[in-house]
Image 1 (spheres, rainbow, N blue to C red):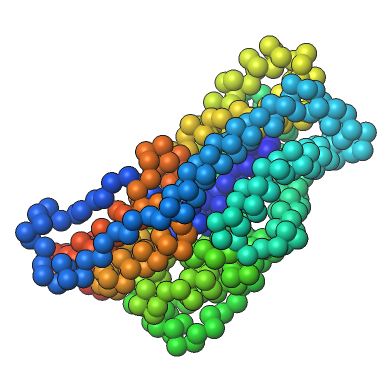
Image 2 (cartoon, rainbow, N blue to C red):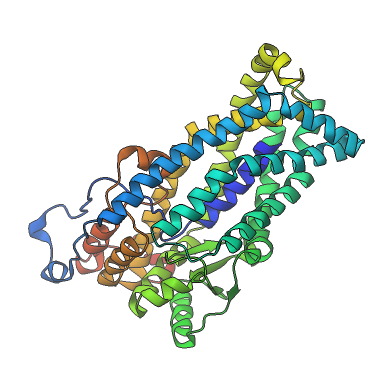
Length: 439
């Protein structure tokens, strides 16, 4: 089912986005000062306190236009499958797939390829504007049109391959167990999602980016020493050449088991100093040590289960009412794919704030881990000011942005936390000190 495929891609995206900051960082609207009384702030803290920079007009314009694009993309993502359904185009694609594939398995696989090709074409205008025109307008992209189009086509090919290989599973379950297909499909999605997370860093990501060892060997030695102190043995750190694509800065954790690694964009290494890079790495090591990819993965699996159940409850009603328009009267007909995608997307949109709220929680915990590991409050706070400037982030976004778009705390909140969190200066125990041999 494309719903399972969509969630697989979403899970990979979110888990790999357990990052310090993205191009559109997640924000909260108000500052958070964790000190109970300003009179209790030590003099050293006052001296090192970094103010939250005011966003530039360019950053605010990028924020507002980004919100409009997100709304457009969400509506477009719902409108395209609806268009395929109510025009009967999905049924015609099924007929063509049946003529090409003949056997059931190949019919399903062929339909998946045809469907994704049609969706790619229909979504191309908005994708081009959001991913190319908009990014260039704000000076965030270095890609040529050919590079952008090449990446888009590669993503399409990867998605087609995954869809052709997996779409038969939910449709077989719909045929064999129409009442419990949603439960079995959710169960089947777990190993598929895990496999995607496992292979993404070594098979998929290198199709789009050039990964390699760190160029600065002295800095790499310091990072590995920090990892050893955090209890990470044999940790892998990769530098990725993103400067040819973007001016934004980022770092993230990806992979499972033997493919787990910490990835630094070369833009981040170029724009942050040594201390700032080390505190960023402390944050990423927090994700690594605290098993955040696993916990986020578990939450996503639960949300997939709940969303598929909601799809199941709605599916029959809509097919009975609109079967004449749809061109099918059975959910096990592969022509039902746009309906499954439409319902899954709509219901998961309602569940998305749960996943994002948990993502913000683990980002806060990773910030805490990084500070306790390095004890360099100034480096973390100033790193966030650079991230705000380079990524055109709004340090205090609105509440709707927080609910549906932000997987990170706000830049303002993170700077204030970096300014204030100093338990070692107050004789208080460290939350994560047990991981690196401290009380």
